[in-house]
Figure 1 (tube, rainbow, N blue to C red):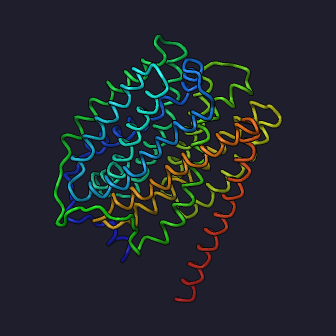
Figure 2: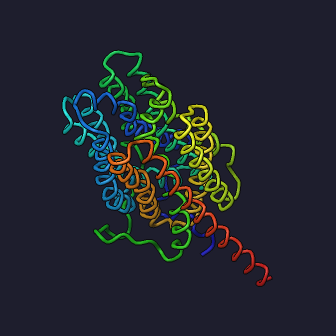
Figure 3: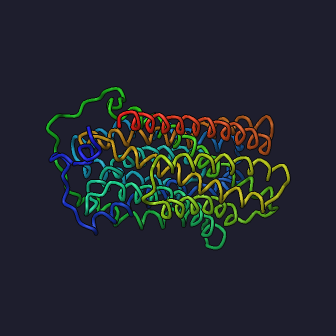
Length: 409
């Protein structure tokens, strides 16, 4: 199967294409990811108000991932079968409900319940929205659709902590106002999802074990590993780095902690925009190399108590994360069969979100024993080594393809 054949949409999901609907769908993805990361700079305040430890923060992340992964596996394939609208409109509603629970929270169980709802919503929407962007792209350009989906996703990850940090620091009702703003902004997103075109597939959906089409497995393995490593860094920044920043800076300013997360993810978005059109394989290799460098510098910054070095590490790590993720999702988006597009994308996002959640949970447990600084340093060292290993695997795979092309010629 050629790339052109793979990229050709089937009649099942041939969507009515318009620039407005395409960008409205990107807006929905951006808003969902923004909302799910609004709590990031607020956890320190929740700890003080509700009296829980840093370990509980990682457990809150754990229930989010525990809800998100099965939601991805169920609702991504379901949207292939029953249409995007019937999955995405309820997902946006559930996301708003999760924000409402955060706004009303007066004890720790409310935070767990809110994160579960957010996990269900983002899991249901991620694969379907990414597939919808490919189907709605006015020129049918899957590479451009992949760029928009990655920038919207990573942009949302970075916007959430920044907006919540600024509102919490300088506006009233710090644990309420950010979520009220999110709910209001989700209203046009919900209207967009309700008006999406939908079509029923020729075959009915039925529960089954996750599987990847044979034609995509090689790309899925290498791209999934690169994205898993890229998002372990995102998970670290979203959960523990705001506290890490306050320790190094000696400041309790919530906007500063959220700003470090936004700087990292902003660099990721900028790198993706500048790298658009470059070969996906090269993006992955370059991204993994920069990730390794950024992680090493992050560990050294903690040892030297240097906020300036931490900011340098944040920029380098952000660029590396953006390149690795863009290269990975471009490859997946290119080769995913049209009749299982959201299914494959959802399985890919399972790897991504496991990268966000699982390693950071381990860091949380480790921090209870070694302290935050020691846990972050050990984590960054291990992930840096894994980045270099995956880089070598990708480079060797590229060399084998080049050798095969030469011998075939």
